[in-house]
Image (tube, rainbow, N blue to C red; front, side, top):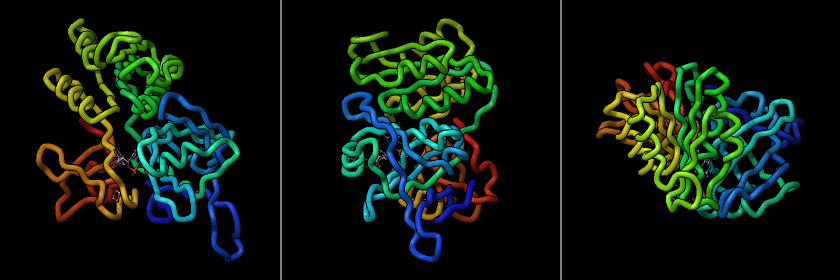
Amino acid sequence: MQAAAAGGGARESLGNKAGGERKTVNRILEKQDLSENVVRMVLEAPAIARKRRAGQFIVLKIGETGERIPLTIVDSDAEKGTITIIFQVVGKTTTVLAKLNAGDSVNDVQGPLGNPTEIENFGRVVCIGGGVGVGVVYPLAAALKKAGNTVTSIIGARTKELLILEKEMKEVSDRLIVATDDGSYGFHGFVSAILQNLIDAGETIDRVYAIGPVPMMRVLADLTRPYGIKTIVSLNPIMVDATGMCGACRVSVGGEDEIHLRGRTRVRRPRGGFQPPCEPAPNVPGAGKTNT
Ligand SMILES: Cc1cc2nc3c(=O)[nH]c(=O)nc-3n(C[C@H](O)[C@H](O)[C@H](O)COP(=O)(O)OP(=O)(O)OC[C@H]3O[C@@H](n4cnc5c(N)ncnc54)[C@H](O)[C@@H]3O)c2cc1C
Ligand code: FES
C-alpha cells in the first residue's frame, strides 16, 4: 500500500507550496444522474488517476469542515487526470455532494486507498452487481476482462428505472444478464436465481465477484459454497481514518475477529493483536489478499 498523509494514498494538492497551509481542491468535470438517488461524477484528480487500480477507493471531503466519506473509484483516465465515482444518496454528505454540479469543486480527495482486488486470468468468472453495487463491480469486470478472463456479468435492480451501467457492463463482459426484482426488465427475479441457473446448466465457473446489498452477497456466498466456487464479496463497513490506523472498520466473519482490508477482503487473525482493517500491516501473512 501507498503511504499517504495519514498512512495511505496520495492527496491531490493545489495551492501554496511556499510554507503556508496546503489546500486540496478537486474540480467536478461531469455530473450525471444515473437513476433516482444514484449519481455519477468525474473528478479532476491526476495523481490518483495515475496510481489507481481496480478495487481501490478515495476518501472525499466536500468543504473545509465536512465529513470524510469513502467512495469506490469506478473508473479513471490517467491521460485526462480524472477519476469517476458513482454514489447513492443516503445521508448528509452524499446529499450535499449530489447538489454539486460540473464546475463546482470538492475540498479534499485522498487516495487511492485500500488493497487493489486480486486480478489474474482465472478463466471463467462471473461478476454480479446489485443496485449501486453495479458501479463497484464495473471496474473489477473491466480489469478481469483485460486480464483475459471470460466474463459473464449479472446485474440487478429492484426495478428497471434503478438499473445502472447496463451499456458499460456490456462493453466489458462477454455476456451480460439483467434481472429486476419486479420483472420490469430482463429476468424476473434475483441475480442469485440466474447464477443458480448457470450452475445447474453445468457451466464452468472459476470465480464469482459479487457486490451489492449485504443480504444479496450472503445469499450468493451460501449458494456457491457447496460447489467450491471461490467467491469474492465487498464489505463496506463505516470507516474512520480509512488508512488502517484506527481499527474502526473491522468486521466479524464466522465468529472470529476479522480484518477488513477494504471490502473484498482477506480476513485473518494475526498473532499478537489486532490488524488494522482497511489496510494491512506489512508483516501479516496473507494481508492484502482477497479470499472467499
Ligand atoms: C471502502 C468503501 C467504499 C464505498 N464505496 C461506495 C460507492 O462507490 N458508492 C456508494 O454509494 N457508497 C459507497 N460507500 C458507502 C458510502 O461511503 C456511504 O454511503 C457514505 O459514507 C454515506 O455518507 P452520508 O453522510 O451521505 O450518510 P450518513 O448520514 O453518514 O449515513 C446515512 C445512512 O447510511 C448509512 N451508512 C453510512 N456509511 C455507510 C457505509 N459505509 N455502508 C453502509 N451504510 C452506510 C448510515 O448508517 C445511515 O443509515 C463505500 C463505503 C466504503 C467503506
Ligand atoms: S477505518 Fe480505520 S482502520 Fe479502517
